[in-house]
Length: 281
Image (tube, rainbow, N blue to C red; front, side):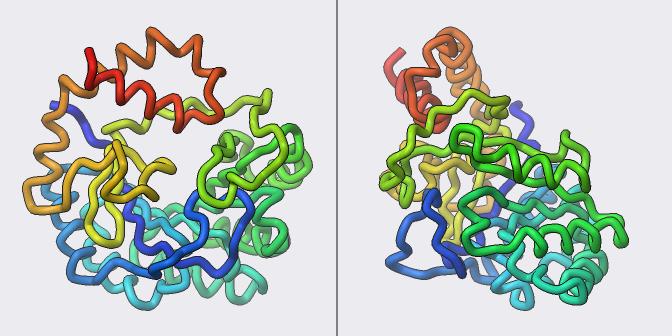
């Protein structure tokens, strides 16, 4: 049986900023995960031995007070409990330390910060530095996700790598989804971009209970997504883990055709092409 290593909960499609590269684009129907559904999902994750969860969005920290009790209830069930955020709440050192203390109390031990030239148009790097410093005090791991165009990411990575290990900074491609459709620059870059291996081992569940094979940009297509598995129910994760044949077929096609991956604008697009081929062969 396939081992699901991590589940990402797409808690909301609501965000306090509108980055030029965001794959969500303009939110026409704001929504967020109910506490009842979140509690049920986390219970199922624990029952299925999933060791890591991440709360993502949108910007989930807009609703931290609403879901922190659910996280605390399940804190002993997971090795890693993280949240992905743009870091707007780190605008002062006091606020950064307040939230890190709160994370520690409810059992969260990882903060993933999205920061790059796009986020920098809204969020000062000083907010990110405040969070990194506060996280060190409370022994919470920090990872930085940097979406890159050409070499514009180098200055930001240079500054952040003085504060956290370089291995904790992940460089990602920008794909032409959502707002990024309007970016005129060439999005293909030559850098050490992380090769995505999330298919089936890192599924996601959105705020309406839709379960996807991964947490990539195609979750924004909802019911029309080729990556949609089903609506969440108590047996969903067990059925998802039983997809060994789909995973192996996908992996074989990925490996056989990876030399052609550069023909695609992003790894998400290449991944979709591989998934569609599994339904043909």
